[in-house]
Image 1 (tube, rainbow, N blue to C red):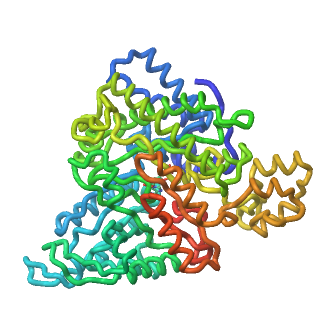
Image 2 (cartoon, rainbow, N blue to C red):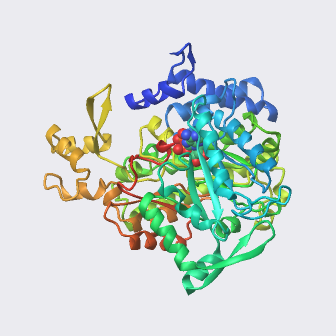
Image 3 (cartoon, helix red, strand yellow):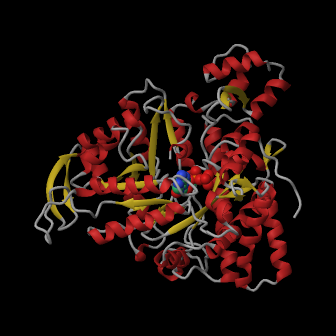
Length: 572
Ligand code: ADP
């Protein structure tokens, strides 16, 4: 296998720290070795489908080329674990939590096994009976979902020390659960549930009550009895207030997610993975992979032929990952092999727009988002149909929505997801997922107190070409955080090099919605607000994301948490 990876110093550090093989604390693998290990391992799945050694070798070469060119990268667990002892390749899991001690503690154990292998877990706690409810067997009173979430949190904290990643959870509670008010405010205390992202599971019924300013019922999940009713607008305002204060909770539109559930006969979707982009049934897992959109721009235009090739090969790669993966539980293996969900998404979208000379916060930007994702969605479905001809449909195909939609065969119950790409975008050296760029120039601390000035490579290129580059100006930009209004910089450059905080929250939601329109699963996106944003601003974004058919939304107001992080994932 030929070719060398063009990696930045930052990317190399990330790889050395957690991805490359080590022996006695010393790295014994080069990045090229790593991609070789992954390509060889993932191509092995082809054996099961009748390919001979030579054909498999050819496919391995193609997978290698796909990754080494940084045109596509699979999610971190695949890079870390393929061809190694763990062989756990998926990033996303959802586990069931029933209303019994056995189920709760069994799930804590299973989550620990998943965290150890680098996967993230999501849970719905909506089935757990509320605080102060009756416990029949002991005659005592129940402690409620939040107290159990704290046990999950402590278990994650303990596993952190020995695992490959730090462990991440999503906790979801339905808006009609009696303990919802406590859930909404619990993370205002920074010490609580530190290993969790929280989202309120919003129903259509609740949103209607908000719009009409009505009350809605809180239901005890144990006996389905109404406990009391609350004014929907007050609850909605509390969610807004809390998100304004601390960035949490986010919201997920559960009914909307279930409208798009590809296998409704197998159950209802109650939760997503930790960063919200992957709704899953209990015991389902999903592996993700992302196309680097910065790579598909050639001579100022998107090269759709190249993109098509990447999509088809990536779908094959991700389908192979399902077979090569070893899952921590028998139930998961069965679900994963039954539905064969994969999540192909993108990274480097903001860099792609810069290369095209189109502002992120513009109608044109939204249009490009739609065109790109519509194409990827369509081609990924074609690739999945072709694979089904070769390998058969996913076993639950006949129980899915697809035969009614006119599909004759399909290999995967879902094909597309937009992941945050927190680490793999660093490896590829591009903007993460569909997020705008965060900073054009920034100081990175290396060693103890030595600081290195980093300049966004595309910005540096333009600054030099247009003759306004100087160390001094770059320092100034690093301090100011934005180039908007800087007289040293031409206005057309200002328009294209917009950063997260230059972009109004409405445009963030417009872009998210454009991608969601053509994505089977969900879209990971944080809507950034400046520090002085009001609660009313946050509310508007929540309503807009509802109106524009997003599956959920997460907001973050600059400086609203004690320790500021670049992305949600870094926070884990
Ligand atoms: P990467 O770039 O490392 O492949 P992403 O940032 O795209 O990962 O996150 C994708 C998913 O991976 C998340 O939604 C979550 O399910 C899982 N994940 C991310 N970070 C962690 C972590 N520290 N521990 C466990 N799972 C994680």
